[in-house]
Image (cartoon, rainbow, N blue to C red; front, side, top):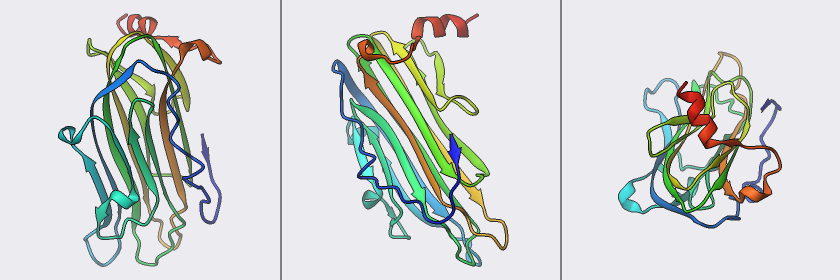
Length: 222
């Protein structure tokens, strides 16, 4: 879903808390990720940026906000990334940008978590993008099983909500975001808010019929 409003985005990250874990039997065994918030301005070719990364050797989970980033901008614009047994999350935003010398604005994030499910679990995913027209709008989520089958849970042009029933096993989950806007001369860059959330839930509480993983595997192999 994409909406547009003029002025500043008025989202409170406190109100958009990371989902609380409602399902047990899930263990995160590896996690890595990176995020880069960037904008170019004339006349210098050096971008303003805020950067964060998490290597596998740093532990199997992560939780970070813009306060944990490094860069040359002070990392003042709010963002959040999270990987743990409850969820995998990206949230980021920028305000209305009307600096005369600003040329573009972007987020890029690549978050990867490996999870072991001790029992059947429901993967529930959603995304929300509120902005003007982006030149690049990728807010994607994929799951890969132990056989190497890659499934798009949230793909380009697909639905913004999805649910899949996953049997016990090991899965690699990737959340990728690339939001980019090139400035049109004489116009500001409109505000942006992007969110992608994957959560693990009790399959017994499903409100809509999720797609069984086995059916998806057989469909992809036809």
